Length: 145
Figure 1: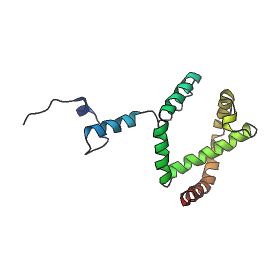
Figure 2: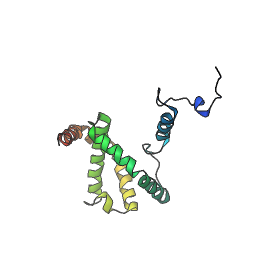
Figure 3: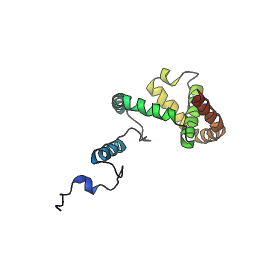
Figure 4: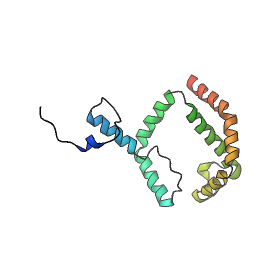
C-alpha cells in the first residue's frame, strides 16, 4: 500500500472534529481561530473600533444564527453571571450618565463612564451575586414564552 505524502494538516496538534472529513475539520479550525468570541481587555482606538464594526457587519448573519441557537438552549451559570454583570454595569452607566442609555452617549464620554464603572469592581461583584436568581427567573420566563 502506497503511503501518501504528509500534508500541513498532519502537523496540527488539535483535532477539532475527530472522525469527521478534512473539510469539516478545516472549517471548524477556522471558526476556532476567528476573533468573534475572543474578548480582549485592551482598549480599542477609534480606528480599531470602526474596523471592528465593519467586521461585525460582515459576520452579522453568523451572529444572528448563533443567537437563535443560543435562545433555544437554557442558559448556563456562566451565561447567567455574564448577563447579571451586564445588567449591573448598565444600571451604573445610567446612573453616571444621568439616565441616558449607552447608545445616546458619545463614544468619548462612554469611555470615561466605562473607566469610572471599572473602579466599582467590588460593588459590581457583590450585586451580581445578589441578582443571579432574578436573572435565572428571567431566563425561565423567556423560555416559557
